[in-house]
Length: 578
Image 1 (cartoon, helix red, strand yellow):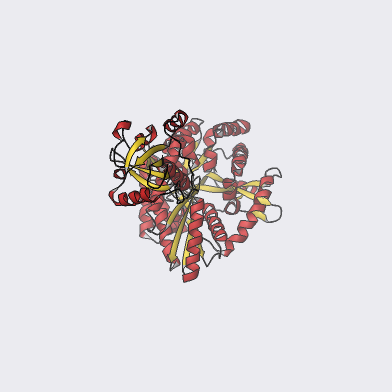
Image 2: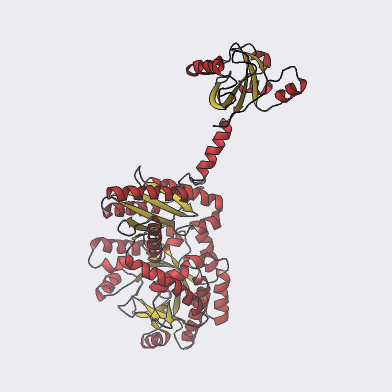
């Protein structure tokens, strides 16, 4: 409540005082015997009238709602020079047009308790609404309407206090969108904002009414799930989230496919305070990114040590290129109909100065996540091209080398230039280079993918979709892509000889791919039984430990020398492409 405003009782005959009151933005009125005897223009507008003569002579209490009229009348009669005169109090003015005005009013006697009363009124509704909106913005994300980081932290603190008191569990889920940047880059930030709002709605549809979905920043969201009785309850939510995110988002007439990776941390199992709980969920989310994305990972104490080590691993990785610690291993690809090696896949290895040989699963995701793979990629392509050119000179002229491209590499505007430079520098026939595109990225933004692949295809290289069957795409959509080869996900192949459903899937993939004039390479082949099945289904090629693991260039050359390397007859499917 504001302090009393003590006003003198100047005469309305004073020209200076009249000019001051007439021009005041606050409403001024004089009430005598319960009726308005004077009203300045601001008070006339506040009361909802057009002219001063429409106000003068009216009952003052009639300007208020019926339930407040007696209280206002009592106040007019009770105010005196020694009372609470001049104190601004909240009153709701019933305007002449039927609307209401939230006001602050002060009643100031002009002479005595029985004499006229000077009423000062100011509208505060708009100001208060503005303050309320500002307060809301401090706790609500302006784009999605979700709680922001500040409100989420407040709710998390309250929820943890309740969980501690009643011995309940709660879960925090840290969610980060996969490959969100290409949406902004290709469709613009406004489309990205539409996608974020759609994601917010979809996340909200996956949780209970008492749960909280918040947006922390960018494409990062968090979920607070209080009242958890069993950890399986959280697993159910995470499966629901994964499935929901795999459904396409309709943005500006396009179907956008985007997945999300998440980390789960549970109180009190994984942490005793809010900061550590969130940090552990973040660690688990990062691990989900490393394990292929589109999944949710539970936090465990075993994750903390690797997370701490990765900072030092990243620093060492940054210098690995300059120290020439990166090398390529090659895995042969066999043409099933002839049993000949028709291609090799180039796979990156890191000869760490202390750890020895480091495999891609231990550093490739980190390199991609930190952007280091963008620097590694062009050197890898050129190195693979140079080695293949040497093999061609030594008699393996039908050999094709396959090189994987990461999603970050595919987003680089100078990718085409890197490939052209590698081919020019090594003199390799473009037809001997195959670039493999991750299935998840290929299906994420179809229009941009088609544009990028067509540009690469124009160089004369061949293109393959890597890991088909990981859950992102459909064979029907593949017909729009200018690709030559489909590489089946190893999960299909592994179960094909024991699981009828997997066998049916492999059969369908091969048949439909062939109808689209695509070659099919089965990855991860480990047994002769799998080879026999794939041969019976007319799969074009196989790659896996059944023939050879990835080996250094010298060992691969021995395999090439021992195996017959030749171009199969013209028109034979799978003859010249791995």
